Every structure is written in C-alpha cells, then in structure tokens.
Length: 90
Image (cartoon, rainbow, N blue to C red; front, side, top):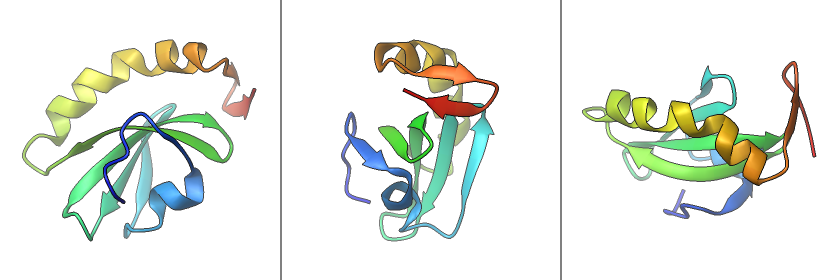
C-alpha cells in the first residue's frame, strides 16, 4: 500500500498487499505489506473502514504499537465511531 497516512481506506484495500492482517489490540489493525517491506498500521473505524495511521519496520514495530495503542479510542471518537463490544457502527 502506498503511504496514505491519515486517509480512510476500505479494510479490503488495507490488507490486500499483505500476507496477513491481525488485530493486535482492539481497534488497531496491523497488516504486512510485501511490496513496501513493512507493516501498515490502521485504526478500524467501521466494519469495512480503516484509518491508515502509520507504517513500521520489523525493528520498530513494537515502538509504533506503543505509540498508537493509547490513541485508538481518541481517533475513533474523532471519527464518530461508537464501539459496541467489537461491533463497529457509525
């Protein structure tokens, strides 16, 4: 995925270049990006909407996770996400 930080993309587009995607923490998706050789980090806003927030390498992925995890709920609130036990609705 081209670096589109700050953009809202479909979940399908967010994970399409990777071998896998994982929800590391509730609301934070991490997808491998084979073309770029990195990991894409995104905050899930709805069932099929992801806010692309950052990219990380294998050497700094833990640091990036520590940076973004505390911001998940704030970013979701800014985008009017109502989190209902894992069911994303706007």
